[in-house]
Length: 163
View 1 (cartoon, rainbow, N blue to C red):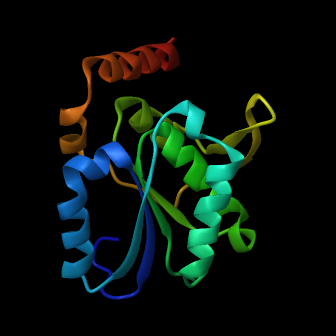
View 2 (view 1 turned 180 degrees about the vertical axis):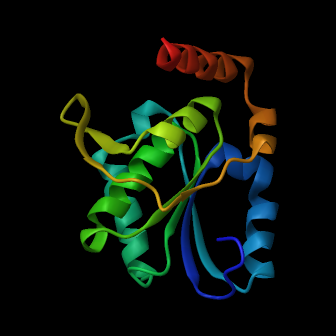
């Protein structure tokens, strides 16, 4: 994203993140002359479903991006980055994507993980792929609005990886 001027971006933002940061997200793209289609996604494991995956694909297909030069951007927690990563790995045989994790758990997953996926037929992560992001942007300001429980989850994940 950085210094790129112009172009198009398909951006998926967690609804809770949009509630606090929508203005800044829109302003960023406008300031850089980037045409952005920004959609929101409900967080939570229960939304890691085929129906939501297909809805994102439909909206992406209605806002075609250049396959190699216009990455999909995911701004949210681990569920959102999993789903958007899977969308990126399957749309047009793969398009680049950028992760902007907004939870401590998302920081951990984004820094070491390349797994993407959705739940299917009652099974967690039944459909998935290995798709590394083009870039990961970490902004600690996004962690300031997290409930204490989410911080603890991330700390536990860090400890688990350290062991």
